[in-house]
Amino acid sequence: MIKRYSRKEVAEIWSEQNKYNIWLNLEIAAAEAMENLGQIPKGVASIVKKKAKINVSRIHKIEAEVKHDVIAFLTSVTKKVGIKARYLHQGMTSSDVLDTSFNIQLIQSGKIILKDIDQILKVLKRQAKKYKFTPCMGRSHGIHAEPITFGLKLASFYEEFKRNRKRLKDAIDEVSTCAISGAVGTFANINPNVEKYVAKKLGLKVEPISTQVIPRDRHAFYFSVLGIIAGSIERVAVEIRHLQRTEVYELQEYFSKNQKGSSAMPHKKNPILCENLTGLARMVRSTVLPALENIALWHERDISHSSVERNIGPDANITTDFALVRLTNILDNMIVYPKKMLENLNITKGLIFSQEVMLELTKSGLSREKSYKIVQSYAKKCFEQNLNLYDVLLEDKLIMIKISQKRLKSIFSYSKHFKNVNLIFRRVFK
Image (cartoon, rainbow, N blue to C red; front, side, top):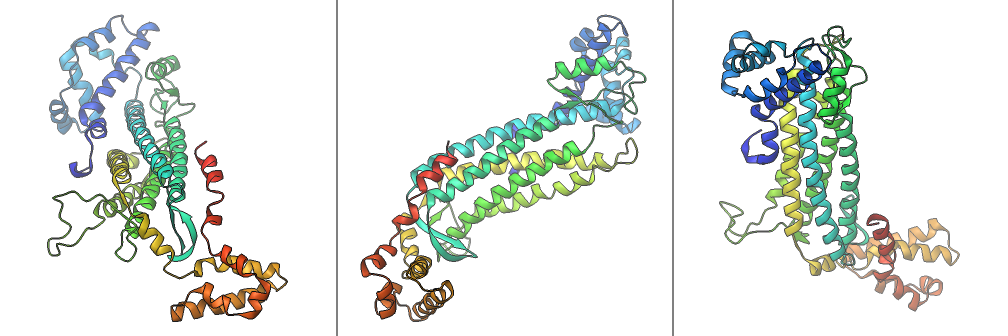
């Protein structure tokens, strides 16, 4: 992943140094278990722990000769530790190390991403309550529908990220397994208690049944959740982008004092951060399909999944983390224009109250079909001639017989649209 869209904390999880450190801890834990079972001499694990040093460049040089990363790693450790290192990896296969290590990296990343979501939830909750009763236009198909509040819009995002948090916790649990089961998962040359010991020491669960690998449906679930989170990020970003359009301009990204919006046009203030999030969301979602395709490996294992995971592991996690932190900052610092929201509410001169006029006519005895036709015809007239719907309805004698002027006036108010805002907020912010 390029540095431009990386944060140090998650990027380091996917560094070669961290990966080999996990491998070493795995091998040491397995050696401790084998010592306890009397399978290897006492003291092997402590000597390895004391003397082993990870030298990434040295491992790469050995791998260039032997063409096998785990053998290169073990050879490097042996040269540093000495003869007792020959007891490492007894009865194990490379995937025991690779898969368990990969899961640990996913867990480490996932826990940081959970914290990122917590920060988004914190900001969304604060902003939703701040704008709880700030009137704004609700739109469907991009067209004015009926009034909502900006707080409700933010509360909707909050509830979605609550679901994302739960999904991610479940996905982390899904990949929190350890497999130390040998060449094809039968424990032919290794005691199952080694796996049990390693799993407990590393805070993992024993994989109930592995082949040579941990089943990839677990990982597909994890990456699918990242894809859903990316979709949620983009949903918020696209909404902000729309609301920042010149014709709408109900809010905007924070624009710093010396920031430049365009190399050609000095007046420009573009939603570049949200546009960036749309692009990053696409990248994260692009990792979901390869993760799903990794589920179907040949027999007990092939390595068609390996190159995929070496790419999507760091890319998806680093990008998701970066995007969530960026979105938090956008939401925290966005500039909201309540007056513009109110102005846009009134732009259609009362057309947004057409549904209640229709319903009131049906209550007076007219059929729904006839009521709809009457209101629709006046709505079209108002839109075409830039008239106020309330004024036009006042001139219709049939309507004024069916609906009193006092009742008609009450229909053309925002307050009734917000009567259940407190109820919705109680549901969301329990």
